[in-house]
Image (cartoon, rainbow, N blue to C red):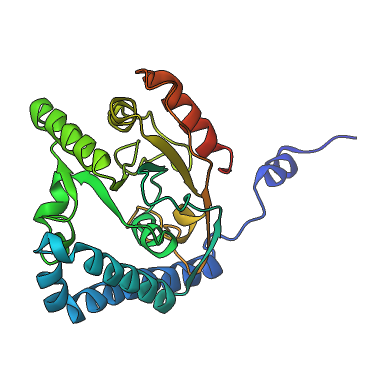
Amino acid sequence: LRKNSSQILLEKIPNKPIFDVMKFIAAIFAYAWKIYFLIVVMLVILILYPIQLVLLSNENYFPIGFKLIRFQAKAILFLIGVRKEVHGKIPNDQNTSYILCPNHSSYLDILLLYASLPTYFIFLGKKELGSVPVFNIYFKKMNLLVDRANPKAAHQAIKNACDQLNNGTNMVIFPEGTIPDSTPKMKAFKNGAFYAASETNTAIIPITFKDNYRLLEDNWGFFARTSPGKSRVYIHAPIFPKNGEVDLLTLRDETRKAIESQLD
Protein backbone atom coordinates (compact mmCIF):
# COMPACT_ATOMS: atom_id res chain seq x y z
CA LEU A 1 0.00 0.00 0.00
CA ARG A 2 1.20 3.48 -0.79
CA LYS A 3 1.14 6.50 1.52
CA ASN A 4 1.34 10.04 0.26
CA SER A 5 3.87 12.50 1.72
CA SER A 6 1.31 14.33 3.90
CA GLN A 7 0.31 11.11 5.68
CA ILE A 8 3.93 10.22 6.39
CA LEU A 9 4.60 13.73 7.76
CA LEU A 10 1.60 13.56 10.13
CA GLU A 11 2.69 10.19 11.48
CA LYS A 12 6.08 11.63 12.46
CA ILE A 13 4.55 14.43 14.56
CA PRO A 14 4.33 13.27 18.23
CA ASN A 15 0.88 13.36 19.78
CA LYS A 16 1.82 15.60 22.74
CA PRO A 17 0.32 18.87 24.00
CA ILE A 18 2.37 21.95 23.24
CA PHE A 19 2.12 23.09 26.83
CA ASP A 20 1.83 20.62 29.71
CA VAL A 21 -0.54 22.44 32.08
CA MET A 22 -0.32 19.83 34.82
CA LYS A 23 3.47 19.95 34.83
CA PHE A 24 3.36 23.74 35.10
CA ILE A 25 0.90 23.64 38.03
CA ALA A 26 3.05 21.04 39.80
CA ALA A 27 6.10 23.25 39.30
CA ILE A 28 4.28 26.22 40.90
CA PHE A 29 3.49 24.18 44.02
CA ALA A 30 7.05 22.80 44.13
CA TYR A 31 8.58 26.26 43.89
CA ALA A 32 6.24 27.56 46.58
CA TRP A 33 7.30 24.65 48.81
CA LYS A 34 10.97 25.54 48.31
CA ILE A 35 10.29 29.14 49.36
CA TYR A 36 8.33 27.82 52.35
CA PHE A 37 11.31 25.62 53.22
CA LEU A 38 13.64 28.64 53.28
CA ILE A 39 11.20 30.62 55.43
CA VAL A 40 10.92 27.75 57.94
CA VAL A 41 14.71 27.38 58.15
CA MET A 42 15.23 31.09 58.78
CA LEU A 43 12.44 31.31 61.39
CA VAL A 44 13.66 28.27 63.34
CA ILE A 45 17.21 29.62 63.32
CA LEU A 46 16.22 33.16 64.27
CA ILE A 47 13.90 32.12 67.12
CA LEU A 48 16.71 30.25 68.89
CA TYR A 49 19.54 32.47 67.62
CA PRO A 50 20.22 34.29 70.93
CA ILE A 51 20.52 30.99 72.80
CA GLN A 52 22.74 29.39 70.17
CA LEU A 53 24.89 32.50 70.00
CA VAL A 54 25.82 31.87 73.64
CA LEU A 55 26.08 28.08 73.47
CA LEU A 56 28.16 27.93 70.29
CA SER A 57 30.58 30.62 71.43
CA ASN A 58 31.89 28.58 74.36
CA GLU A 59 33.44 25.13 73.89
CA ASN A 60 32.10 24.00 77.26
CA TYR A 61 28.55 24.41 75.96
CA PHE A 62 29.06 22.69 72.58
CA PRO A 63 27.32 19.43 73.64
CA ILE A 64 24.24 21.40 74.73
CA GLY A 65 24.37 23.44 71.53
CA PHE A 66 24.58 20.20 69.55
CA LYS A 67 21.38 18.91 71.18
CA LEU A 68 19.63 22.17 70.36
CA ILE A 69 20.80 21.93 66.73
CA ARG A 70 19.30 18.43 66.59
CA PHE A 71 16.02 19.82 67.91
CA GLN A 72 16.09 22.55 65.26
CA ALA A 73 16.79 20.04 62.48
CA LYS A 74 13.93 17.79 63.59
CA ALA A 75 11.57 20.76 63.87
CA ILE A 76 12.44 21.96 60.35
CA LEU A 77 11.96 18.50 58.84
CA PHE A 78 8.63 18.10 60.60
CA LEU A 79 7.36 21.49 59.44
CA ILE A 80 8.35 20.96 55.81
CA GLY A 81 6.92 17.43 55.70
CA VAL A 82 10.14 15.42 55.30
CA ARG A 83 10.14 12.22 57.36
CA LYS A 84 13.28 10.15 57.86
CA GLU A 85 13.73 6.40 57.65
CA VAL A 86 17.08 5.40 59.15
CA HIS A 87 18.69 2.04 58.48
CA GLY A 88 21.65 1.12 60.70
CA LYS A 89 23.36 3.13 63.42
CA ILE A 90 26.76 4.30 64.63
CA PRO A 91 28.32 1.88 67.15
CA ASN A 92 27.65 3.16 70.66
CA ASP A 93 31.24 3.42 71.86
CA GLN A 94 32.13 6.51 73.86
CA ASN A 95 35.87 5.74 73.60
CA THR A 96 36.01 5.48 69.79
CA SER A 97 35.69 8.24 67.23
CA TYR A 98 34.58 7.79 63.64
CA ILE A 99 34.80 9.67 60.36
CA LEU A 100 31.30 9.86 58.85
CA CYS A 101 31.37 10.02 55.05
CA PRO A 102 27.99 10.68 53.36
CA ASN A 103 27.25 11.34 49.72
CA HIS A 104 26.38 15.00 49.18
CA SER A 105 23.20 15.35 47.15
CA SER A 106 21.15 18.18 48.70
CA TYR A 107 21.08 20.84 51.40
CA LEU A 108 18.79 18.44 53.24
CA ASP A 109 21.86 16.29 53.95
CA ILE A 110 22.99 18.41 56.90
CA LEU A 111 19.52 18.47 58.46
CA LEU A 112 19.19 14.69 58.08
CA LEU A 113 22.59 14.10 59.67
CA TYR A 114 21.63 16.05 62.78
CA ALA A 115 18.16 14.49 62.93
CA SER A 116 19.43 10.92 62.41
CA LEU A 117 22.62 10.75 64.49
CA PRO A 118 22.34 11.24 68.25
CA THR A 119 26.11 10.90 68.77
CA TYR A 120 28.01 14.21 69.00
CA PHE A 121 29.90 15.14 65.82
CA ILE A 122 31.37 18.15 64.08
CA PHE A 123 31.77 19.03 60.40
CA LEU A 124 34.78 19.69 58.26
CA GLY A 125 33.16 22.18 55.89
CA LYS A 126 34.15 24.72 53.28
CA LYS A 127 35.36 28.12 54.43
CA GLU A 128 32.49 29.96 52.72
CA LEU A 129 30.04 28.64 55.33
CA GLY A 130 31.74 30.82 57.94
CA SER A 131 30.77 34.00 56.09
CA VAL A 132 27.02 33.36 55.69
CA PRO A 133 25.14 35.84 57.94
CA VAL A 134 23.31 34.29 60.93
CA PHE A 135 23.90 30.74 59.69
CA ASN A 136 27.64 31.09 60.33
CA ILE A 137 27.25 30.70 64.10
CA TYR A 138 27.10 26.93 63.50
CA PHE A 139 30.48 26.91 61.76
CA LYS A 140 32.67 29.67 63.17
CA LYS A 141 33.77 27.84 66.34
CA MET A 142 32.05 24.50 66.81
CA ASN A 143 32.98 23.06 63.40
CA LEU A 144 36.17 23.13 61.33
CA LEU A 145 36.42 25.08 58.09
CA VAL A 146 38.80 24.46 55.21
CA ASP A 147 39.99 26.83 52.49
CA ARG A 148 40.32 24.50 49.51
CA ALA A 149 41.91 27.23 47.40
CA ASN A 150 44.85 27.41 49.81
CA PRO A 151 46.82 24.11 49.93
CA LYS A 152 48.69 25.08 53.09
CA ALA A 153 45.48 26.05 54.92
CA ALA A 154 43.74 22.91 53.65
CA HIS A 155 46.55 20.73 55.00
CA GLN A 156 46.33 22.50 58.36
CA ALA A 157 42.56 21.90 58.46
CA ILE A 158 43.14 18.16 57.99
CA LYS A 159 45.71 18.22 60.80
CA ASN A 160 43.14 19.96 63.02
CA ALA A 161 40.63 17.27 62.08
CA CYS A 162 43.16 14.60 63.11
CA ASP A 163 43.55 16.31 66.48
CA GLN A 164 39.79 16.27 67.01
CA LEU A 165 39.62 12.58 66.07
CA ASN A 166 42.44 11.73 68.47
CA ASN A 167 40.48 13.55 71.19
CA GLY A 168 37.50 11.26 70.58
CA THR A 169 35.29 13.57 68.48
CA ASN A 170 33.33 12.17 65.55
CA MET A 171 33.91 14.05 62.29
CA VAL A 172 31.63 14.45 59.25
CA ILE A 173 33.49 14.90 55.97
CA PHE A 174 31.68 14.91 52.62
CA PRO A 175 34.24 13.11 50.43
CA GLU A 176 32.91 14.76 47.27
CA GLY A 177 33.48 18.20 48.81
CA THR A 178 30.37 19.69 47.24
CA ILE A 179 27.00 18.78 45.69
CA PRO A 180 27.71 17.48 42.18
CA ASP A 181 25.65 18.41 39.14
CA SER A 182 25.46 14.70 38.32
CA THR A 183 23.71 13.65 41.54
CA PRO A 184 22.79 10.92 42.42
CA LYS A 185 25.91 9.86 40.53
CA MET A 186 28.80 10.87 42.77
CA LYS A 187 31.81 12.86 41.65
CA ALA A 188 35.41 11.86 42.39
CA PHE A 189 36.28 11.66 46.10
CA LYS A 190 38.86 13.95 47.67
CA ASN A 191 41.54 12.32 49.81
CA GLY A 192 41.24 14.37 53.02
CA ALA A 193 38.91 12.03 54.92
CA PHE A 194 40.94 8.96 54.02
CA TYR A 195 44.24 10.59 54.89
CA ALA A 196 42.84 11.54 58.31
CA ALA A 197 41.53 8.00 58.80
CA SER A 198 44.90 6.49 58.01
CA GLU A 199 46.86 8.97 60.12
CA THR A 200 44.70 8.45 63.21
CA ASN A 201 43.73 4.80 62.58
CA THR A 202 40.07 5.87 62.63
CA ALA A 203 37.29 3.84 61.06
CA ILE A 204 35.14 5.40 58.34
CA ILE A 205 31.37 5.00 58.43
CA PRO A 206 29.85 5.49 54.94
CA ILE A 207 26.35 7.01 54.86
CA THR A 208 23.97 6.99 51.92
CA PHE A 209 21.26 9.61 51.41
CA LYS A 210 19.02 7.89 48.91
CA ASP A 211 16.21 10.40 48.33
CA ASN A 212 17.40 13.89 49.28
CA TYR A 213 18.20 14.96 45.72
CA ARG A 214 14.61 14.17 44.75
CA LEU A 215 13.14 16.11 47.69
CA LEU A 216 15.29 19.23 47.38
CA GLU A 217 17.37 19.44 44.23
CA ASP A 218 20.34 21.81 44.30
CA ASN A 219 18.83 23.89 41.55
CA TRP A 220 16.71 27.05 41.59
CA GLY A 221 15.27 26.34 38.17
CA PHE A 222 11.48 26.51 37.93
CA PHE A 223 11.11 22.80 37.17
CA ALA A 224 13.69 21.59 39.72
CA ARG A 225 12.68 18.57 41.81
CA THR A 226 11.22 19.79 45.11
CA SER A 227 8.66 18.17 47.37
CA PRO A 228 7.98 16.82 50.86
CA GLY A 229 8.33 13.06 51.32
CA LYS A 230 10.40 10.28 52.84
CA SER A 231 14.17 10.41 53.14
CA ARG A 232 15.94 7.08 53.51
CA VAL A 233 19.28 7.16 55.35
CA TYR A 234 21.60 4.16 55.25
CA ILE A 235 24.38 3.97 57.86
CA HIS A 236 26.84 1.33 56.72
CA ALA A 237 29.26 -0.82 58.73
CA PRO A 238 32.56 0.81 59.74
CA ILE A 239 35.53 0.42 57.40
CA PHE A 240 38.80 0.20 59.32
CA PRO A 241 42.25 1.14 58.03
CA LYS A 242 44.36 -1.97 57.59
CA ASN A 243 46.79 -2.19 60.52
CA GLY A 244 47.03 1.58 60.64
CA GLU A 245 48.84 1.68 57.29
CA VAL A 246 48.31 4.55 54.88
CA ASP A 247 46.07 2.93 52.29
CA LEU A 248 44.11 5.80 50.81
CA LEU A 249 42.99 4.07 47.64
CA THR A 250 41.55 1.05 49.44
CA LEU A 251 39.69 3.15 52.00
CA ARG A 252 38.39 5.48 49.31
CA ASP A 253 37.21 2.68 47.02
CA GLU A 254 35.53 0.67 49.80
CA THR A 255 33.75 3.78 51.08
CA ARG A 256 32.50 4.63 47.61
CA LYS A 257 31.24 1.09 47.01
CA ALA A 258 29.35 1.09 50.31
CA ILE A 259 27.63 4.40 49.55
CA GLU A 260 26.82 3.39 45.98
CA SER A 261 25.27 0.11 47.16
CA GLN A 262 22.10 2.02 48.12
CA LEU A 263 22.06 4.61 45.33
CA ASP A 264 19.83 4.30 42.27
